[in-house]
Image (cartoon, rainbow, N blue to C red; front, side, top):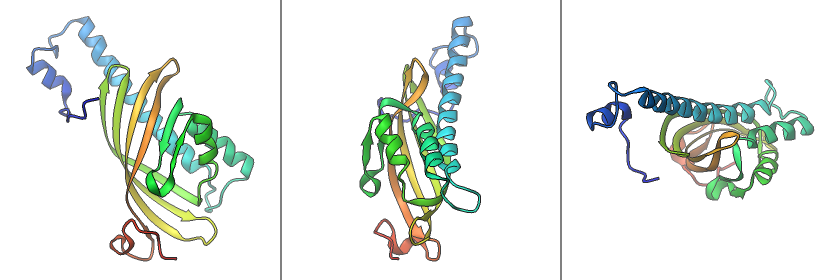
Length: 194
């Protein structure tokens, strides 16, 4: 993937360049429909990851029983390709392989979390795609019950497989993690003062 910015209305750009657009034939229409379906499948894949991430906790901010927590973590990891990579950066480490990712997700340091993935910017390149998302997450550390806000950018590489779109890599770029009771400008990305 080139990493170049693509105009949000790529169809209009294609039409302006004489590469299809509204006057196209059935092949053009099929390609446009497939593009829309691909984009929606990728959005649903990310939404499913977030749903599973949050379903591991009860409404009163507790981890579900270990067997249930691990089962949901496996569902969460199912969005990755078999050799997919969960890259949490220096804060959370890098894990390769769907099974290893499932184990990692079953051992996260939270007793509660809510994931909000926003502002998707997705580019398609045949059977590969890249998505950039902003993450807003509220979470509570296990052990001392410390409530924190966290925000990050995730850069996801996707690959089309026989089972549909999967994440080849999800790279987490922390913007800040801060205690609920202080502004994010104090600790920034340093270890949180407890």
